[in-house]
Length: 546
Image (cartoon, rainbow, N blue to C red; front, side, top):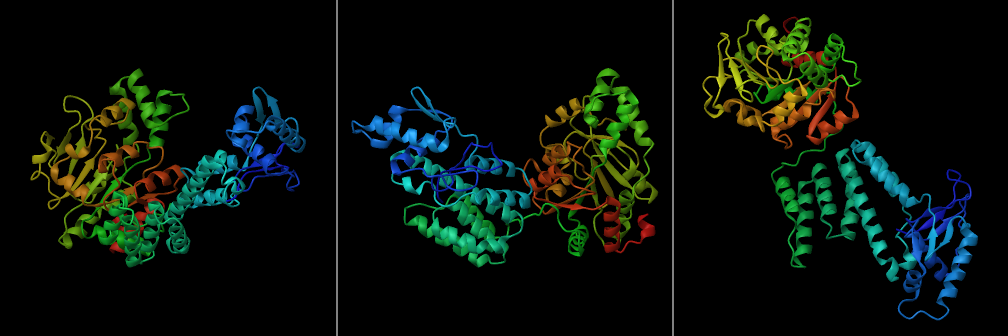
């Protein structure tokens, strides 16, 4: 690292120098040429003012910082001479005299640009984040303020800048790891760990880079080297580093997940293999954005935000829950035909029975009956377990058997023999059933949030299935903000225990960020095409899946 500087470029206001603080102290003119800043004492005055840019710096403070406890009698005159010389270089509008001292006016600096780039990088996809952080780090020209390394007034700022650069470098490495560049990072991290042997974040990153490059032994060796280095100081590795070593030993480190995963043979083979061992739970969503628009049109809702929850809240408050329920039923009845995705899942029971496998647990947040109709059309029996959103049993689940008989599930922990995937398919409706009550308005969701972990309300056998399965999320768009709620309900706010996938026709940046935060692979493909591909890999004919 190097230090401070001031640059004048055509992108800035003519006549205003640009201050650079990420390398040796210098000032550049508009043509990029360095300005003459004078001797060491004059440069020190500039550094002191620049470190407190746009603030008045008292004369007494400057003298104390420059000369210490015993300044010469000529200190004030010497300071005034330095200020005068700097003002000739920088301009009278840049270096002002303002009681009780001086103010350096800085419109922008390389440090400002660095901090803006770092801030812009937050929340972006790994690839974009790494690019912006790399751009920010490129602004550094060496160690900060090396000419003042032994000056008391610069010591704290130099330490701060050093830490700022190193932390940003670690964030860039995290982004590169998330983007799948583990092998490329190893040489850089080896050098960085050698320079900073006690910095555990860098050591953990090197362990991960080795591990994701297929070198578990090297990852464990890096941990042992760090443990020995700390032991010499009478210290132990942090709990986080110890936990990482344990996960590497057990091969439990999740692989980096790309923003959008590849929809290739390997993916379908992996999903199909998990389905045929009964380890996949599909979670079906629906286009609630369209439903919200249609409901808004029926009731003349004129606001810009036409999300289903907002429109449903308006209808419930102005017309009542009865008309809301009736209109939802009418809208859903007009589009109740099963989709190819529903048909696909309805073709699976014979295949599973033929192989001696248990039936499917199908989770859905849809309000429609397309899935049920597809199973009925295929001649398949199924149980429905649906959430109760209103009334005295609010917060519980209701069981509807294939015969049509219904029963409230009052004690989920003992409700086991009544439901069995060995007998037939089970549909778990997390947002309820229009035959009873549904979670749809803002007030409904507030009540839903207050109910806590769904695991305490779902029958015990289904809870066990959910906690030991991969999830396949199908058809969840960004407009369904309740997706975050569904994820929290399914995994209690923790990352999913098993590798899972989400399939959407087209992913927006925020969707990618949401799925990535849950360690879920995101795939972009129309749902009908995805269902067709799964059917082919399972050997199901198009006629059967149609």
